[in-house]
Image (cartoon, rainbow, N blue to C red; front, side, top):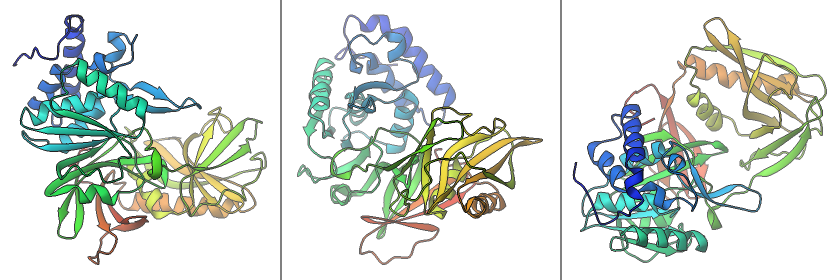
Length: 414
């Protein structure tokens, strides 16, 4: 493997074993996504030098997020993303030598440094962030590691046009609720947009590699992911309701879906509840990513429930999922419990129409079961004004329409 010297520092020598261990672990876990080139550049870029002062080498090279900035409520607003996510999204982006790449969400600058290695000396990376503190921190880290010749850090709202020409790749490293028209305007005809797109629920987020096929943008790969929230004009704050649980603890209901009205929910879930089983048994290892995606697209009225205590509902044999169906003054919570052969899904209903709302949720669980419990998703985006037909379940976004088709194809980058 080629050795680089332009971005090393004395403390990097101590990090070498940690770097090797991190990359070896990624290569073992994701042999298809961690290509020889990605493996190489992750050896080259010293991740610990993009982490906050005082971060240990063990923490810097663990396969976990390193927060770099939080807001007043303690929520992470910028971070060094987990290595597994960085490597797999780089694989999705398919960067080549000499390309111009736009990164939306500068973070610590670590991802921009990796992109700089991938584009090589004839390429260019522009990374943009709305937070001036993040911008200055990223600039400093990139300067200290020798990447200012290929990386430009811009302070701006990343969903707005930058006026810096066209890019071969645009990679978004924040969770977004829509596809900004400016991204498509700044993308070359044969380019790719890689975007972590959410839909109706904060936990529903797929990083999608979108490319033009005629008037549409078709997802050529997708993977489930998690990123910090986008800020600025494209940010979306949830509606929130506080409910008292059966045992007196707090339950927080949140909704990012304009079709969900939380105002009619009861003040307490202490009244008698109703359980409706689905008959859908998920065998080990128990992945239900596809179920969440199916529910998000099939059911307007979804909300997220957050509990202080997992046993708050008083039904200790059930495990709750933070997906709830809301219908006026009643709600149903997605649950599962152990049975022979795996875990069965059901819905626990609360409120005056508990039975009905639980049955609505369970019917969609059953529909997913009848389809064979698909876990992978194919996405197609149609910009506003385009008339080309869409296949699959379609959801309206502010800038266009998004269609998803669940399937069993193992080739997706899940």
